[in-house]
Image: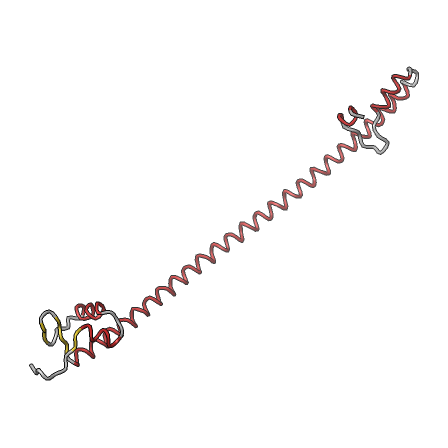
Length: 168
């Protein structure tokens, strides 16, 4: 071996490219790079090995970053696809509920009209019945007339409720 050759430690190589020493060690281990020499427990690498390690570590970093970007792009696309499907389902549910709400409103309106028709028919029937009763009771005394006046419905055609008549 040539002792005059410049050698580098893993720490020096890592510091020269600005990464952690463990990344350099992993690259050396994974690629079976043998040290140029040893100084106790410290592994020393020559210039050629240093250049190879630097290029390899940088290309691995770029490659792993590209893989991460591709993975994140893929997962982003999958996420977007899932979210689009969920949004479409929610829109369909909203449309369904809107139709149900419209049907409910139409049903309420028709029920209200039916109730109004029944009330008006009942009012007409009550009006004719009361007019027949009033003509037959004209012959009775004044106390009966006062009671009939209390039981009469108002002149506007709307029948008063029980409590309203009770608390006059």
